Structure formats: structure tokens, C-alpha cells
Image (cartoon, rainbow, N blue to C red; front, side, top):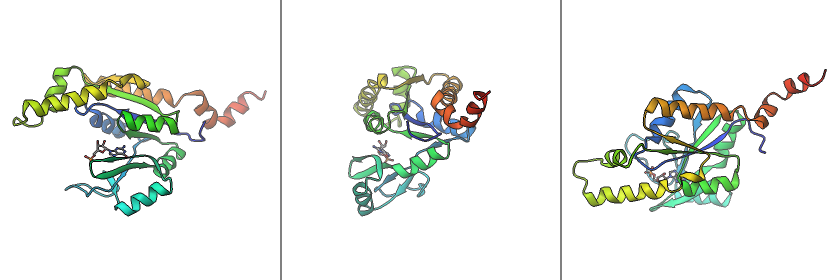
Length: 207
Ligand code: 5GP
């Protein structure tokens, strides 16, 4: 058991399931929850800010961080590196904050190996029809493009059973309250309460 009071959550979903809207709403109502910000070597897009969407760094710095074993997990996506630094996560967990990692099932496997206490949540869309609607970004999208996105989503969803919790994002408010309930319940796990309320527990047992 790590000496951290916060919990680490892995949040995965196929794109189009509404995962980011969910975690943003949760963060908006629970000041003990944070999203992990990744490092990347890709250039910022218009509107993106260093330290908000990503920490934007150059290749050399990224490779240095790999050599220093600074990453919790990292991957090469297209021509760029992406990774989650250990330091940023552990400092938040040590402050008692819950941290969400928004990663796919492959990243989730890497994280579970390093940190088996990580709690996995998988978000599913309410139907294939609904997913297709949400994946159709423009009227000009060809059937082929949409079918490719759907196939990728189905392949991601086939890993749902590797997670501790599943949320079907049909009614948004219901999905959000389920997510909030998971976070609340995980804070009451016995090892966490032992750490947090050690003095109280000693007192109560010292008659
Ligand atoms: P984008 O460049 O569009 O922001 O992200 C490209 C891809 O990189 C997405 O699939 C995203 O999920 C993935 N990605 C972003 N951050 C990380 C990270 O820290 N680790 C891993 N493994 N993938 C990431």
C-alpha cells in the first residue's frame, strides 16, 4: 500500500462516449479531484496553454525524462511522445487529492502494473446508434471514415471488463452521480481511513 491519501483513477472510454464532459463536471463539483496533465512533444494547438491541456516540451527534454525514469507511463502516438510524469501524480496524491488519468486500455494496463491500487472506470455510450451520431463530426464525413471510427470505438470498448466500474452515459446527471458515488465510496476504504484517522482509531481503541 502506497502512503498516499488520494486515490488514483483510470478513466477510459471510446471517443464519443462523453468522458471529458463527465470528468469536467465532476471536477467542477468536487474540489478534491484533479485531472492529470500529460507531457507531450507535439506543438500546442490554437487556444492550448502550457500547463493546462499539456506540458509542452521538446524531444530532448522528453528523452531525458524517459532516461530519468520520470514517467509513470508514456507512448509514442504518430510522430510525438506523450507521457504522464510520476512527480505530478504523486505530489497530488500526497496532498490527499484524487487524480484522474484519462488514458486508453493500453495505458491503463501499464498503470495497473506500477500501481495496482488504481481504480478503473469505463464509460460506455447508451447505444451504437448514439455513438455513431456523436462520432459523425461533419455532414461531409464519408461512411468509410465513420465506419473506421466506429470500429476503433468497438475495439476500445471490448476492454471494458478490465475495469472496476462501468458507467453507461445515457442520462448525464445519472452518470455523473454514479461517478461521484464511486469517488466518495473509494475514500472510505479501510486502508485510507486507517491512514487518515489513525489517531482517532487509536483513541477509540484505547479505553
Ligand atoms: P492529442 O495530440 O490529440 O492531444 O492526443 C493524441 C493522442 O495521445 C490521444 O489518443 C491521447 O489520448 C494520447 N495521449 C495524450 N496524453 C497521453 C499520455 O500521457 N499517455 C498516453 N499513453 N497517451 C496520451
